[in-house]
Image 1 (cartoon, one colour):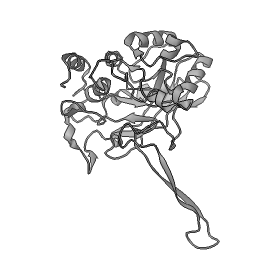
Image 2 (tube, rainbow, N blue to C red):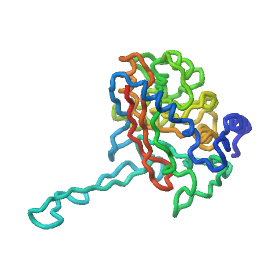
Image 3 (cartoon, rainbow, N blue to C red):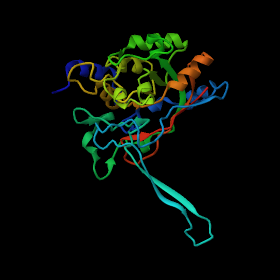
Image 4 (cartoon, helix red, strand yellow):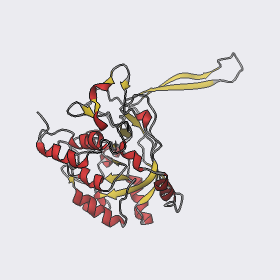
Length: 310
């Protein structure tokens, strides 16, 4: 089924193709300028560091629904091996097999396409089985160090100890309310973290409840992020956007608007629970965020171990 006219209307309003030149491959990360980084560093007050990544483990968030997206399989390849002979220094090595988007991750700009195109009008068939992404691979991404802002929609809509219902569509109005509660304005170059509380299901051991159905961002929210020149967005759900979809039979429209039209990374499976508690305790909702992509050549996604520094 072709994408509806309403989708294309939004796409025209948020499109960034050519904004940073015809050869651009990093999209809205161009908004993280040296000045933005200097201002982000200035937000650090206590030095409190909050990790936002899930452990990389075989009993991870993936249930097998998405083919090939396997949870990390950790294998020891050498254990106390005296490679140079008895009595010499011994070494231990290990290896891992996993989907690059299995746990806490960024979706790269080739993760989805629509109408045969990728961000900045690159052809979707430039992604191949042999080489991966010829353009827009995650190895092209610059260091992601900037100001982060937590928009705790779950706290605003469900109380300090609550989480959003599975059928809750996170709207621009929700983002406005969370921004007002945070007492700060989202600005150009920020990475916005949207908390729904959905990840609590996984942390409590219920992988099925974590995955589907799930709250998520509305098709109306890309315009909110575009208007504020946000550099990237992440949340604490498996699918990022509403699932099952907000608009019947319109699958992953927010992915397509963010990644293809805007050139904006989006992240999933970010654990925002400790960060929400820390922000509430310190009564501040902005911080220095480090969320570096692993530079997998040709990759369409990348694991990330983000850290917020308050």
